[in-house]
Image (cartoon, rainbow, N blue to C red):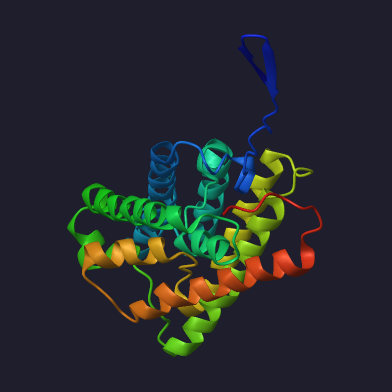
Length: 263
């Protein structure tokens, strides 16, 4: 409330406090977009670099300490990296780190459409930077042999089977994300662990079928740098389908506490 004083008149103006719209992990959506998009770029870079480095090392059978990495290392690497990034950057940008998460939230009016291009551009840029970094770290065989960890359907799986696998596991991941990252009763540390475990589970399930993309940026970044685009449309579209369905289910059925909705 403010007061305006005129000669012989005192007028009091009542102003409603500005409503703060909160996103995932209770970050302020209408905050500094440059700051939040930078967090998305850095976070996606860390996540994708960790995952594809494990994939490349396993593909090239390069030992790090003791025996060489195996395919089981990939979900572990992805889950741990995601938990760390969510705990570190979640309060700054919401730690979407995945265009499917961003689009799923926007399609259900939980994130402003005006911010979507900025977030997705930052996520894809982070993934491309991660692929270039992995190429520099592991050398020519990383691109020529391991294709920088780019995803593709298994030899025994059709593109549509891979599509189904990617849509299902992304549904599971995004449902976990919106469930724990929007509930104030869930501590941030617990949310980060749960989301990391969800990604690890998603890669374990989909890895033998589709390569475990679960994230268009994670899949397309290495594809663009490696120049290998095997069934790229699967990894671009299927995660979006799964994410939109997951957020829609959460909003219509599971969410019990009203939260401000972005315009």
